[in-house]
Amino acid sequence: MRHVKRGGRYLRVADQSWEEALSGAHSQAKGGRWNAPGEFEVVYLNANLEVARAQVRRRLAPLAIAPEDLDPANGPVLISTEVPEARYVDAVSDAGLRSLGLPPSYPQDAAGAEVDHATCQPLGAKARAAAEPGIAARSAATQPSPGEELAYFGPEPLTIAEREGFGEWFWPKGPAS
Image (cartoon, rainbow, N blue to C red):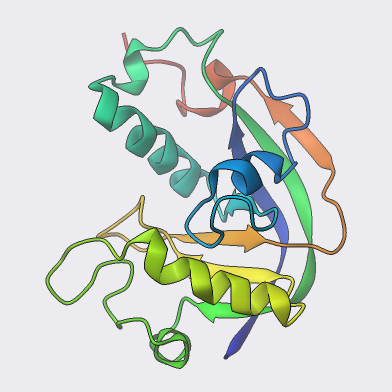
């Protein structure tokens, strides 16, 4: 596995009802791109605001709901946290993707379909077993534009630096009319 240095401010899109917005318990129960259900906790983070906004659009698309359809008072909150600087598994660069056996077109395969979670989950398990702090990866939510996410394994717990309501963070100048 190749590594990239990452750390600093990262963002998490969270449901307002989550008591522990930086817990990986939900991903442990349900699974995610880098962890199978029941395996281990992962806190999925966004490298910047563009990626966080793309995550919201991606989550709403199957429901045929646009962000503008949400009540700003009830939409997802944005949690800012400081991630410890470390060497994370590289799923960003072409060389890092090759070292993981992923295509250079990742998060799409050669045919243009999204690489499925079942392909990535064993790689996450291998990284976790090797005590890696996480995986820096290209974002599927921002494709074809570049964007980056961080699947944070720990070991240090993350803390909330700032919490912003949906109406405060999603639209640069407030919701569209």
